[in-house]
Figure 1 (spheres, rainbow, N blue to C red):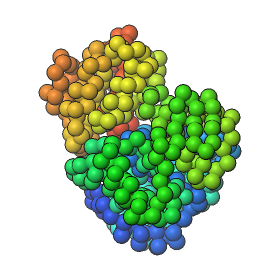
Figure 2 (figure 1 turned 90 degrees about the vertical axis):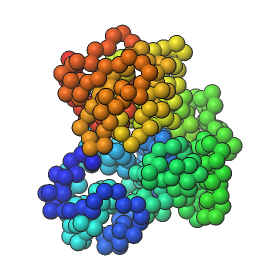
Figure 3 (figure 1 turned 135 degrees about the horizontal axis):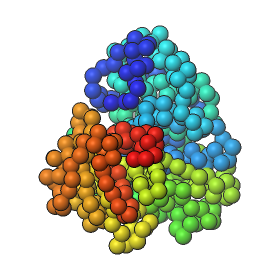
Length: 409
C-alpha cells in the first residue's frame, strides 16, 4: 500500500501487477523501454534490515552541507508517495511526478510492473530529469531481487541484518544477509555496518565472490567519542538523530561519501550530521510525544536503548503500539515492556494489521485496546512520562499528519 499511488494510476490510466514479485526481469525491461533512467548519476545504494532511512538522511544532510544537489528515494511513505522521492531534501512536486508517470504510460508499461516497481521507475525518471550531484537509493526489501537493484552504484551500503521479512528473504541470518549482499557490485566498494557474525561471514563470502572491496565498521572506520576515524579524522561530529545506534549510521554515511569521491570538510560534516532529520525515527512531534517505527525486534532494542540514553536507565514510557500481523510483534512487545509504564494497543486500517486484541494477547502487562479513530478522538491518555507511538511505519504514516494538524490532541 503506497499512499496516493492509486491517484496517479487512475489519472494516467496505469494498471499494476498484483502483490510483491521479487526479481529484476520486469524492471530491466522497463528501464530499457524508458531509455535507462536508472543511469541517473553518482549513486549510493543502501540496504539493511534497520537503519536504511537514517543512513540516507545522514548521507543527504552531509552532502547538502557541502553544497551538493541531492536526490533520494526511500520507503515507506511518511505521509504519501511524494515524500519518498526527494530533490534537495524536498518532496517531489505533483507536476514532476505527473511527467514521470506519463512517460511510464507512453512506454507501454501499464500492468507490467508492481506498485513498488512503478514508483521506483518514476523515481529514476525524476532523478534523470533533475540531474543531481548525488543520488541516494534505499532498497525496499532485501536487495538482490529488489526493484532498486538495477542501478550501478558508486558505493553500496549494508546497514544491518536481522530477522525480518522472513517469508520472502529466508528464515536464517545467512539467507537474509545473502539477499542484502546482492547489492554489492564488482569493483564497487561496499560499506558494512555492525552485522551479527553469521551475517558478516555470508556478506564477506558474497563480496569476495562478486569482487566488491568492503569496508567494515569497527575494523576500517569508526565513530567513537564524537570522532570519526579512518584515513581521515573528523572531530566533534554528533548525529542529529537520537539513539546510540545513530552513531553507526552516521559513520556508515561518512565512509560511503568518502568512497564515492566526495571531498568532505570537517565543519560541513559537523553541520550536516547535526542537521539530519528523519520523520518517525524517535521524532519528537510535540513536547513529550515521540514517533518511532520499531517494527521488528532489532528496531525495538534500539528504541529501548534510545529511551534509556535520552531519559535515564530507569525511565519508563507510555506506549501506543500498532503492528502488522506478519511481524514478530510478540518479541517487539516483550522487548518494550521493561521500559513501559503503560501499554495501549491500536487497530489501524491496513489489510495486514494485527488487531489491538491480538497484540494485547501477546503482552504480559495490563493494557488498553483502542482503534485509530479512538486515538484521533483523544482517547489515548498519557501522563508526564514520555509518550511513544511505535510499531508499523504504516501506523505512523496514518497518525503523524493527524497529530501535526490537530495540536489540541
